[in-house]
Figure 1 (tube, helix red, strand yellow):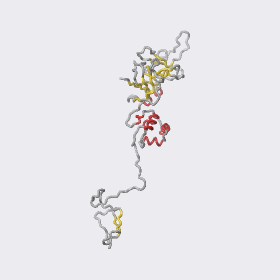
Figure 2 (cartoon, rainbow, N blue to C red):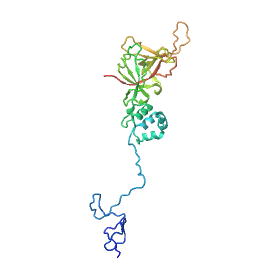
Figure 3 (cartoon, rainbow, N blue to C red):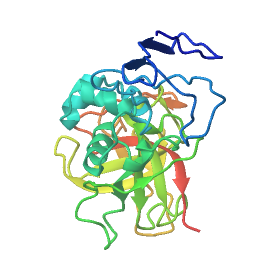
Figure 4 (cartoon, rainbow, N blue to C red):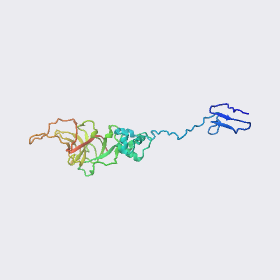
Length: 306
């Protein structure tokens, strides 16, 4: 005799087929049958539960996004570099740089150091919660009269870093100078850290009275040997020479240092030969190899010792 199994809650996913003979259920075939028990074996009211469907082949990978956030893209854009250009600097492909920027790959210590060097920032500036960028302490300011003056006024890397305040615009175009003597103590005491905007990043001419950092050469700018790095106030007096005034309590310091001599007129013997130049409020500065000194940049912020 053929009988059909009956269910109070028929489901399209529950199908019993086959032949049931008296006292014999060996030939019953069940497809997609769920007896309505949960994972703990408890009865779910006889209602069939949908069976778990497992996809064939390798499981689809969930794309990682921003799992390791960083500021690489922001800092790369700040430097005007493409992914390919940054990759060339650090020895990575464009695809690898893209993965790092999207946070799909974590930064190793070596990669962090290489990227920070290529982007000219502190390694900590790559962290996602950091605002702004740090500037390297790249030079030492001291006069040639000071016994503590260094053998080299330019500090080789790796540098110490200082974070300017938010008042400093475009800090990526700045560097820091550490003052180690009293040659400018009427302006900044020894131990001060000065944030200096590079001359090539200066917006327009330099205003008269601005505080500047100057590299003073032993012979001239063409010779290239540094005698001292000074901090002073830029001016162009009636002589027409571009110079900085030194504000110091030390009596052995000169009152001024010439940066660029003014052209002299063809005057007769006994005359000064100075050109009759009008007093300026701004300086349009272009260094030459014959200059005895060179303006490195304008001081935009000072961190003085307490």
